[in-house]
Image 1 (cartoon, rainbow, N blue to C red):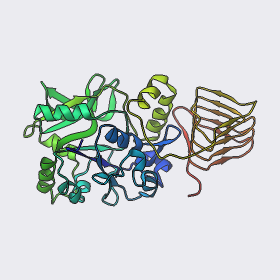
Image 2 (tube, one colour):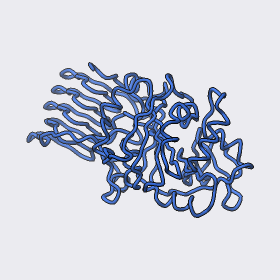
Image 3 (cartoon, rainbow, N blue to C red):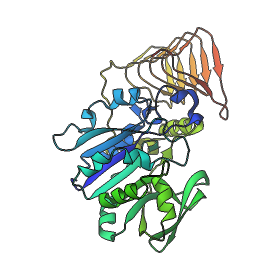
Image 4 (spheres, rainbow, N blue to C red):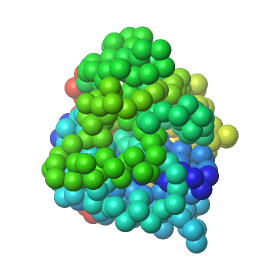
Length: 364
């Protein structure tokens, strides 16, 4: 799809993710035993045939760049197009309503001006969903709209979200706090490259404005329409968001939708030996990737690579990230352990469903 280029804004942070994003950006958060959040938007782009993708990077981008590298795992090492690393403004948006800040895009005007593509698809990297954008782009092209926004119908009240109001097919208002049954914005926008360049020029002297704020202020001046996506969507802006979205993977229907064969989610490949289970190991309703050693009990939990669970140890309702060691007889419940934590023999770590225990990453 040479007439569309992509922009992924990864320059978003929030203190509500606490120690999980102390040394990594939200987009680089590990998810689903072997993935990072940015894998979803990157894969959505390439599965939709978008061959030129720019990623606006945050100030603390080391872990993100280490993961995406040259883009080869997403087939983005191309002579024409490919992956472009676009520097974001230091200390990017930490407002939970801001994702697509104009100053970040304006700082990378060369990426837009050198392209010959007619359209730009702009999205954020903190939302988990598996979608082929082709239908949205086709609708935008055929409708003659100035801008097309992605949305879904909220299945429950969603405080902090953006509610979309329609008059026939046209969006007439963007408001706060979608309730059950309302159209709820997913921060993804399709518009012409020329219009985006005009917007950036109009607001060249404005230090801080989100693209969605601009659209909200111009619903009467622009023809803005919506494209409905009915699949699974989960944004990540707090510890409880991260925990719930991870635990959702223990539901077969959600896991199969997110990791469908038709639109595969690609990630950085790492060779690991198969997981070894001892005769005493007991595992139920859990995700355990390659490279682990399981000698204890794991229930309703998601583990990442190279986790060791000692004999007699018990893990319930928890997320255990890469290279953690749970020694013999230890017990963990309702906890998130970041990388390289060691839980010593017979220790007890216990949170609750409403007050999760979170341990920060150890080492580099």
